[in-house]
Image (cartoon, rainbow, N blue to C red; front, side, top):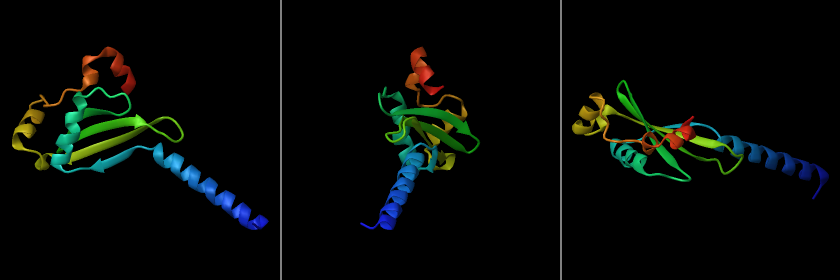
Length: 119
């Protein structure tokens, strides 16, 4: 391999590595359907050791979940926010959310030591 080709390869590999590391360590925001949101929201009850989902709440006409898991490249934690519109959820769930009694209870709300994870 010529010296200039080797330098190009090393630079390209370095750029790719940095792109993967920084891409895995950023926050993400995703819109999901009402059905997918309900499936993900049901995971807030599950105590997870690698991945944890938390019900964030109602914000205007949308409802939000947060999911955290370790970044496997570069360390740290990857945050993903999932949201859906109230108009995409069943009316009984919307009524509970608007009344301030969501159908999902975060497992972290039941454990003082688990709350430290979300700080």
